[in-house]
Length: 380
Picture 1: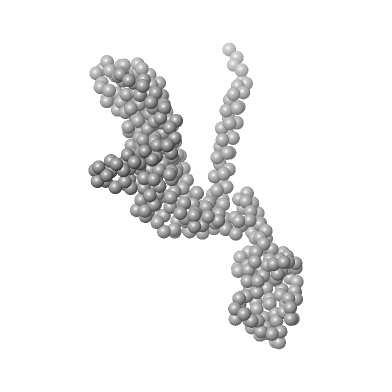
Picture 2: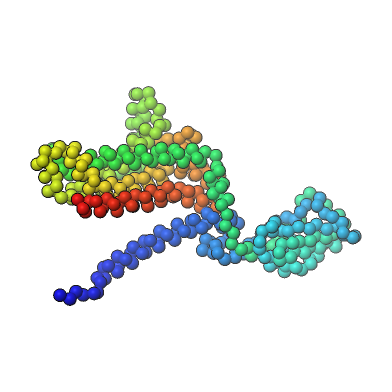
């Protein structure tokens, strides 16, 4: 029998779609990472795709103050380097904001009253005057320079060195790990019960779970917070605690968790479960020894979704924890940092990349266990 070597067009379409999604995710992430490593001045004037090429800057700076002048013959001279030791090449310069690019590098320009200015392409400048330079501030120099690519870790040092960032990082882990584990434990038991245990009202419970998927989080925040505050007052517990946000994330994540796990568990082979019951296994033994090992791919998938959602959450954390130094999470801490430095793109990109490092590690780490769970399930 001769099989056709032609592949289905659907296979090529699938490969092209996957490739498109990979590129769609990789390019912005790469741009974010490259921008976080660039010099702030270069980041402000050019995009990340020009990071490996020279960039043109129009800059205004001041020469050394008159206190640094020295007398050479019958003239008073101020010397220095306008690039401050950085590598670059100046093409044009000027001494007035009306004509910032009036002269080419190397020209000797007459300012007034016999004063002259000369700026070389390497940044060296000479200011000469027949009389003493007066005042406290140096002369303004406008120049246009081509700067080579410059990468630095200063953005990360500024972000990681911010006050309270380390504590907020620990706070985020304290919130995220239990808020990921608790819904999985509850949803796994509930999904097994809704899939394989027969009891009155099971269909109604499944319909309620599906209905809860469409309830907006913002609609339930205020009633949930009031209920938690009432319970806290009843038992003398403060509302701004980790227990509150764990319960909140558990409540918001349970409908999706139960829905996903129930659909996966109900598709497991019925013969395995019936054989276990014939052998005298209880529901708990079936759940622990059969359902959990076979359902590991679904558990790992939901763990990824729940971890990413809780880690990146800001709204629920602000409502249930606030912004006290002992409880503030990483997203809220970075929001405060970006609020004071909102125009600093270097800080913004570095902060954004800091927030996605842990989710990336979790995703790629659980992906390995996800593949292992799929193989184990197929063997069983």
